Image 1 (tube, rainbow, N blue to C red):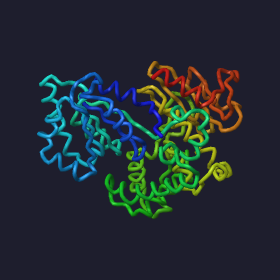
Image 2 (image 1 turned 45 degrees about the horizontal axis):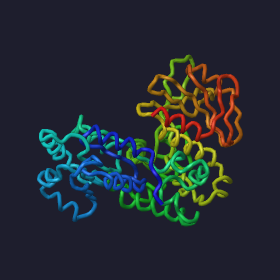
Image 3 (image 1 turned 120 degrees about the vertical axis):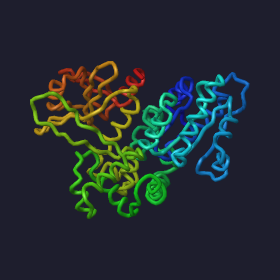
Length: 398
């Protein structure tokens, strides 16, 4: 089963603007499936072109890597077609070559839609691409499936299993749980060593599991360091690595100009709720709902879905004072509107803290995202909404 991806339109738009488009996201999020669909539909970047079919190279495949022994000559020979380079983070030396090839092909009259670059490590790939291909590359982050893509009727299933396609589409909860457990093991044993310092797999699994237990907590390295018998700087590097692999989100605090003492450390979430549940051995809906972490995994699930639908250049944060006044998510939209969002899994009851926070941060709009199906005003400038209603609004602004 192929589920249409929200970002396909944006990737196609970028291919019409930039010579290269970089698509970053965690492994198994669907980058390759989407890239192949785009490549199969194009000839030389244009459906109406008589140019040769697109070319796909998997840089984890020795045969495809061998094609790039003389990368410049090979890539120049692909003129007139879209070339997909998958797992490009494995060959960082290719970026300078790409720059030269792109510039030569531009001088020859070929502009946009030359290369589609896929990679699993966000920050490193963005740094390399940004430094070497400045002005020649557009970047899109593709995460796992989101609520707008799977439909309202599958929202709870998406929360329980997470958005990795093979987990979400599994024939049973057991098969989904087994896939996620294997996914975690593969990341620890094979993928993480590619991107960071050699970390014992068992130590990193303990760190990952501790993050799951503290889902949505304000970051404090000290308890992690004590439990793992490591120093704070090492623990911080572990967190940086998980963020770079797009498995963890650091949600920054809002630095509002208010006369109150604010919490100034980020909150940390595992980005896929299904992985949280797997690390805590919660394999089905009954197990998740009966666990104390359920509310926080729901909160992280909502945050990820909202941010994937938000327009480009939206700035995100949370707001919390030392006295406990809090907004779970603050969106500063590109049109300069500020939306303050409180998240509840149960019935819609806006807290007094939300209304106080609206005044503190001068929000243009207050939203209570709740688990019911209705949308209605709550008074005091707050509106109760469902996830899908908000996702649809944000998608319309993108």
